[in-house]
Amino acid sequence: MLRLSAISLLLLLSIPYVSAHGFVYKVGIATETYIGNIPNAEPTSSIVRQIDTVDPVKGANNSFLNCGQDAQLASNITEANPGDPMSFLWTGGDLSRWPHNIGPMLTYMTSCSSTDCTTFNSSQAKWFKIAQVGRIPGDSDGTWFQNNLYSQDGVPANVTLPANILPGAYLIRHEIIALHLATVLGGAEFYPSCSQILVTGSGTGAPTDDELVLLPGAYTDEDPGILVPDVFNTPPPPYTFPGPPIAAFVGVASSPAVSGSGSTPTPTVSASAPTSSSSSSTTGKTCKLKRVSNSTLTKREEVVPQRHLSRLVRGLAFALGGRTH
Ligand SMILES: *[C@@H]1O[C@H](CO)[C@@H](O)[C@H](O)[C@H]1NC(C)=O
Ligand SMILES: *[C@@H]1O[C@H](CO)[C@@H](O)[C@H](O)[C@H]1NC(C)=O
Ligand SMILES: *[C@@H]1O[C@H](CO)[C@@H](O)[C@H](O)[C@H]1NC(C)=O
Ligand SMILES: *[C@@H]1O[C@H](CO)[C@@H](O)[C@H](O)[C@H]1NC(C)=O
Ligand SMILES: *[C@@H]1O[C@H](CO)[C@@H](O)[C@H](O)[C@H]1NC(C)=O
Ligand SMILES: [Cu+2]
Image 1 (cartoon, rainbow, N blue to C red):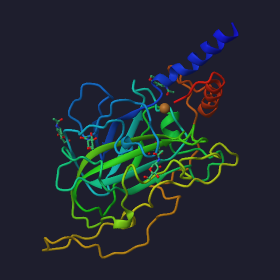
Image 2 (cartoon, rainbow, N blue to C red; image 1 turned 90 degrees about the vertical axis):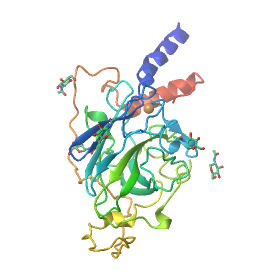
Image 3 (cartoon, rainbow, N blue to C red; image 1 turned 135 degrees about the vertical axis):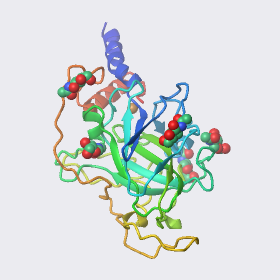
Image 4 (tube, rainbow, N blue to C red; image 1 turned 120 degrees about the vertical axis):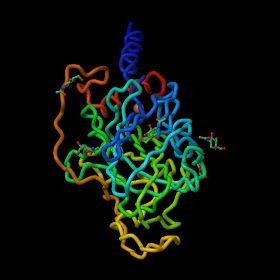
């Protein structure tokens, strides 16, 4: 019965993974909250482009790296002000807590050109990066900001819209890269999500051509931030973010409105960019996280730290000749 119990154990360990991926359930902009459609559900009007499965996008060349798994146009767009705080609440497909806690979170934007985004196909769009967060600075365990989503219900990722961004319709693409399987080539899991926002105001900031990338196109499977053999090492090694640097204009404060000019705004400030790999759009919280133990927690229990579970599942799957997600 060894075989049977091994299979039972694998099943037992695999069950949580049925819903153990996820999607963006809520987007916050300033004080408003917008609901994203559950993957594959009958869509309602939203600003969030709906995907068709909670499963991760695999492979840096995958066309679904653009806006997520078979992402559809969303029928709504909403206004946002430069400098607005935004939040992205990632959950499992059953609205349970986000199941991963290892890897960075990156944010990109692209102009929807002359459209209001509701008809804009972004597959050939040029994206610029506005934020990225990795490990929490000063945390000796190397805890990732992503762990804040994992360790407590309802905690979103936070991003600030650039204070001087040129007005217009944009897609904002929030991405989690889960690295728990990234010790091997192709193991990284990509979770991109795109929302449609109409930026108001009189900002003048825009990316330079060399800050623009295609998605897919910006990453390769061999990038040091995507294939990360030492991700579980102690002490935690420094992390190298994939993709371009954060666009330089993101670090520039808002400029006063130019009076009496309808012409194309020209950024006059040239500041050096906050491009170091430690750039963070969050407010530098370095406090230790409290482990919440909540008996109402379902399936994805806290008992087994996820990195160990992942290793266990991988080990088992390897032993049985199978594959994990
Ligand atoms: C991904 O795209 C790059 C650049 O086009 C190419 O060199 C590489 O072979 C592709 N990799 C796969 C796995 O298709
Ligand atoms: C965008 O265009 C690509 C390539 O033609 C296509 O595969 C994809 O389905 C389109 N996406 C949307 C949201 O229409
Ligand atoms: C579209 O978004 C606007 C602005 O948030 C909201 O007022 C409106 O109700 C939305 N429309 C639909 C059909 O949901
Ligand atoms: C987002 O901000 C909230 C409120 O400050 C905070 O509790 C949460 O930890 C932040 N999220 C991340 C991923 O750091
Ligand atoms: C535990 O979960 C329940 C139900 O979601 C919630 O009402 C309660 O506040 C949670 N307790 C803690 C300590 O998080
Ligand atoms: Cu997953």
